[in-house]
Length: 115
View 1 (cartoon, rainbow, N blue to C red):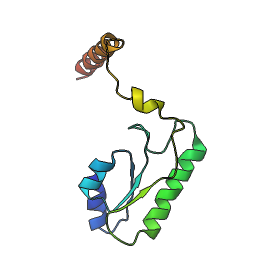
View 2 (cartoon, rainbow, N blue to C red):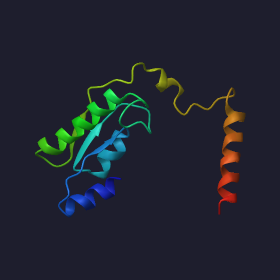
View 3 (cartoon, one colour):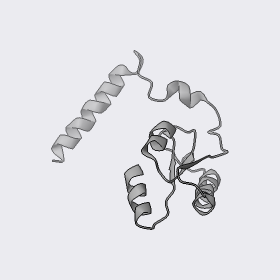
């Protein structure tokens, strides 16, 4: 996404990236970035929370209009609600290892059959 944003900008199309991987996106040097401190895969907020999603998208549009220097980062003033997700995000332990392995095997088998 970062490379696409830079290419579009070089061709006169303003962009803003909304994301959670702050270190990665900033290192890529996108022109404008709205950082949300959410689990990966949820850049505009919780599924079904249209009010939160609209506020983040609105902020991103404001950043496109107001950013006056390259590589501008704005942190969205929103919270996921609780920090429980941090403790469990991408957690692999003895309690879920077998289920995750089975899910991965099933996904790989499905991908192989789709080729």
